[in-house]
Length: 187
Length: 191
Image 1: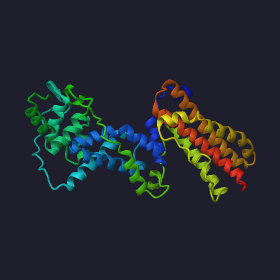
Image 2: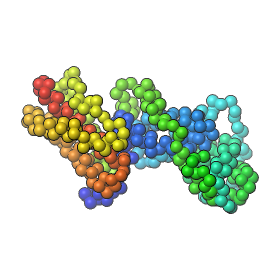
Image 3: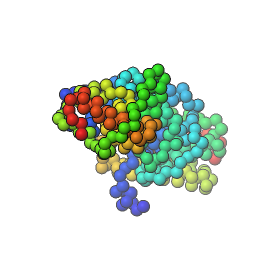
Image 4: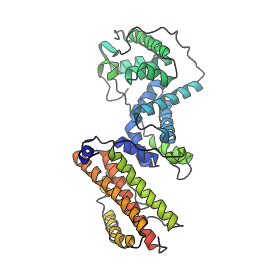
C-alpha cells in the first residue's frame, strides 16, 4: 500500500481499539463499551422490558465480550457480535424464569421478507415502544432484531436459536398484534 | 422510552432509536468484575492462548504495533536486564478521562521527563549490543510512525475523541519504552 493509499483509507479506530483491548488494554475496552453500551442496553431493554435486568444483561454482555475478545473475527461487525452476545445473555436470563411461552405454529408470513415496517400514519415513539413492549416474548424478540435493528430473518433466527420459519411466523404474529394495538396499518 | 424521543412521531419502526443510554454508568461494575475474574496480568489474547494476525487498516495496525513494540521491549528488558523490575517513572501518572488525555502531552511534567529520557537515550543506546539497539530503535520507529499518522488524522478530525485516545496511548507507549531503556541503563546491570 502506498502512502497516498494509507492517507486516503478510512480510519479504523474501532479496529485499533479492539486490537488494544485484546492485548489487555482496559481503557481501550472501556472506550468500546462507551461506544456500544447504548445500543446493547437498548436491545436488552427491549428484550427484557425491565431496566434493572437490562442493566445486568448489558454488564454481562461486556464481561463475556472481554473474555471472548480473542475469538472475535475482526472482519465482522463488532456491533453485531455484541448484539449476538446480548441476545444470548438475555435469553439465558429469561430461561431462568419459570414462564415458557409456547412457540406459534409455523405459519409463514406472506412474502414481505424485506418489509420496511412502515406505519400508515405517524405514531409517537412512546406509543410504539409501549406496543412493542406488550408483545409476547417470541414475537417481540423477532420484531426487535428484524424491524428495529435491521437483521435479516436468517440472522435474527440464528441469534434467537430458532428456525427461520419460526422467526417469520413470530414476525407475522408481531405485525398482526401491532396492527391491533396501534390501530394503524403496519406495512 | 428516551428523553430525546419524547413526543416524537415516526412512520417506520426503523426510525425508532436503536441506542438507549443506560440510566447510570455501568462501566465501574463491569471493570470491577473483570478485575475480580481475571488473574493478574491476564489479557483476552493470553486467555485464548494465542494471537491473531491483523488484516485491517494501517492505522489500527500501527497503533497496535506501537503498543506491541513497547511491550516487546519491556519484556525483553525484563528478561535480560531487570530481574526485579523497578517502578516506571510514570507508573502513577495515567490519564483518566478524555479531557485529561488531550492535556497529557502538553503537561510540563511529561515534557520534562520526555526530554530527559530523550537526552539520555543516545547514551543508553550506545551501551546496548547492536541487536538490542536495533530492536529498541525499530520499536521507537513504529511508535513514531503511529504518532505521525494519528496526528495527521487528528489534523483532519480534531474533535475525534477516539483518535485522541489512540494518540495518547501511543505517547504512553513511547514513554514506556523510553522509561524501560532508561531504567535498564541506570540499574547498572547491563543489557
